[in-house]
Structures are given as C-alpha cells and as structure tokens.
Length: 212
Length: 367
Image (spheres, helix red, strand yellow):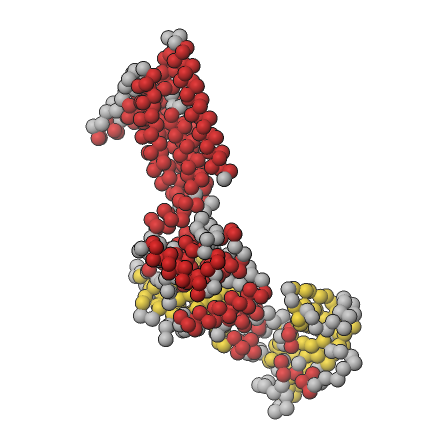
C-alpha cells in the first residue's frame, strides 16, 4: 500500500509539475511583459488557490471536471475519481508559486538585454531561450521546486475530486490520513518522515539556488 | 557609398519626435541634451521601436515605411543587420566575452567561436575571452560590446553614449578605434552623445537634436563655429551668449556695445544699430597674466573681472566671472594652466575675450 501510494504520488507530482512549469512560465512571462486591463485581477485569480480552503478549490474543480462541467460535457473526458483528477488538483494549487516566482525573475531581466539579442539576429523564441530564461533561471527553478513540493503535498482538493482509493488515487498525504484513522502509526510515521524530508530538501534547495 | 535615410515621426509621453537625417559612410554624432529623442531615433533605426509614420531606408533596403494609415512595412530588428552598442553596453551577464561576441554568429558553434576569437584578437582583447561581463572594467566591456555589435558584419553601427562610463585615456583609445573601424569597414555610424568633447573627438558630422528634432547638421567645426541659432549655440555648451548692439561694422571688424562694455569682434555680417546675440566659447575666454606681454590676438577685449565661482570637472576647470554690472562670462581651461594665478572666489582677475572667437548669431530667434 505504501509502495503504490509512493508511486502514485510520484506519478501525479511529476505530471502536475511539468504542467505547472510550462503553463506557469507562459503566464509568468505574459504578466512580466504585457500591460493590459485586468492584470491585477488575473494575478489575484491565479493566487486564489493559495488562500482558499482546499474544499473550495476542490468544489470548483468538481464543477469544472464533473457532470455538467466543460471537460465532461464538451470533450467527453471524465477524470473524476481517477489519478488525472489528482493531477488537476495538484496543478491548481502549485501553479501560483511558479507564476509569481517566474514573473518576478523575468521582470528583473533588463529589456536592453533582450533588445541586444534582437539586434544580434535572434528571433523572439531565441531571445527567450538564450537570454530571458537563462537570466531568470533562479526564479524559474525556485518556482518549479516550490510548486512541485506543494503539488506533492496536496490533500484536500485531491480528496474531493479524486477520492482516496487505495492503489488508484490514494497518494501519500491521503494514505497518511487513512493510516491515522486506522491507528496504523507505523505507516503514518514513515510517510510523515518522507514528506517532511522532501519538503525540507525542497526548501533547502530553493535557498541554495537563491544564494549562489 | 552607403546611405541611411531617416525621416520619421513619433509621439510618445507627450513628446513629439520629428527626425530627418541622411547619413553616409561617416560618423554622424547625434548631439543634444538628454530627453531630446536621440535614443529613440537610434532605436527606430535598429527596429526596436516603431515610428508612427515616415520612412527609414538603408541603400535600397526599406527598414520602415508608413506614409498613410494602414500602409506599413516594418523589417524586424533581427533582419536589419544593424550593430548596436547600448548605453551601459547590455552585455549578456551569463555569457563570457567570447560567447557574447559569438552570439550573432549562427550555424556551426565552433566556427562561430573561432570567428569571435579572431575578432577579439583583432581588437586586441583576446585576453578577455573567458571573462564574464562583471569581471571586466567599463572600458573592457565597451570594447567587447563593440566587437559583439560588429561580429555579424553590419552595415550600420549605432552607439548610445558609448564613452559615458570610461575614463579619459581609455576614451581616447576607443575613439581612435571607432574612427579606424568606421574607415576600414566603411560603416554608417550614428553615435549619440551629450558630451561636446566626445562629439568633437569622433564625429565627422554633427546633428544637433533638441525637443525631438534636428536643429542643425554639419561638420562638427562648422556647427560649433557657426551655430544656426542661439538655441544651438547654447546647447553646444555655449552659455556665453549675450546681447549687444552693433556700433560699427566694417572690413576691420565689428564694434559692439554690450550694455556699456565695448567689445570688438572680427569682421562678419552685421547691421549697425541692431541688437544681436553674440557668443564666445568658454575655451576662448583667456585669463591674463598681469606681468606678461601678449600676442596680437589677445590685445583687444581685455576686462577686469571678479571670480564668482570655480568648478573643477575632470581635467578642466570652469570659472564664472563677473565683468561689471552683471556682465557674466564663463571661462574653461585645462586644470594645469594658470597655476601661478590665484583663482579663488572674490579675487580680481583680468580676462580677454578673443576677438576672432566672438560670433554674431542671427537675431531672429533671441534667447
């Protein structure tokens, strides 16, 4: 049971983190460079999952993913109570870290450097990958690590949209809850240690990236 | 012979730029106070900002064209082949000098780096190849930035205040380099500066820019000797503009009445009785030694004055003096001269306004 929870957590976290990095980077770049009406509102909207109760986030996700939601009605995809639903939950709560961190570090990149690259023959894609991203890498990596760590620890919203089905949707945080309810303190202790270790390592890594 | 034609309009931040300029194989200095639109003009040529209307062409290549709303031809910056040395250089901080220079050399990476290394060598900075920008001095960064801008063999080179962050000896060397490179590579060079000495040192021609438009274009010496109007004169570092009435004008010279002081100028166009702006460069006002005989040029226009204040900037000194009754004049001289004259605020001194350096300006636009 511990093995399958570990594996599932890994699967969900990696998938969610990849999505967080790609989407978060795009939104971060957009927010750092574009000026438009409603920018603050968009930022607040993306940050909401950080402050809302997990049940509220989970409820919104159910509206989006479940019966009557756009994913099911328009695309015919039903992910509720499967592991991809857990990915959605992890993605939504991890995304704000990536967006804020990458936005801040991209905004710090001198526009003159990007202009220099343009006069030296770079396309916009080249400018991003050869200048902007390398210079913003610290914030981008920090955002990915924090977002990933948050995705790994996601519990409340996951429980609402994916349930806690052993072997299918029961990730580590859910298994801990389950174990404590069953008074299986051995499992709980082990997983709590694992989770704490990973979280600590993530924070340590972010501090290291920030200071070098 | 290359030809860069700029004829553009752009409005931004309550400011209107209307720039018309024709540049050949030469170093054209855009000279003027900050905020005059010089950098925007460079950025328009490079394709980093879009003018509202007008045209920019280089030889038979159209960079930008828009005369009617809807019509629009705007070549992206990356396709213009314009080398740009940015203010503060904008070297990529995460890349070594070599990789900065090799940035524009596409295709095979090793060949690009080889070419970049050759370029560094030709500019005698190969020893900097592996250094990051933060490990280089201002002058070194400047040379790397120049090498980077030239790496892709552009036809046009733009420089934005290239000498602002380097010390004097380095500046002289860079200025010589720039003149040599311009000649060797037959480049069209546009160089923005607000420093008159830099303009003098590198420029073949000077375009005086103020409030978004070109006030005067011409050979550097000509613009300084014959500013078209008092605005240009004043901007060209000439604060010594005063108004005087023409008393006499003839082949021997012009006699002027500057509110009670009689001043003599060399022969030039003047109408007797007219009130005209007159100017003299601060360099052409001389402090006189009381115990030495002087040459013909300094016989006329000798006045007693009192030192008002002194400004030492770099290796030159700017002195403000009061001639009499609020006649104020500025004197600039190299710091090492006049060592034996006690120049302190309140001290009496003797000044000479060089007769042949006094210029009468057209009076239609008084300051």
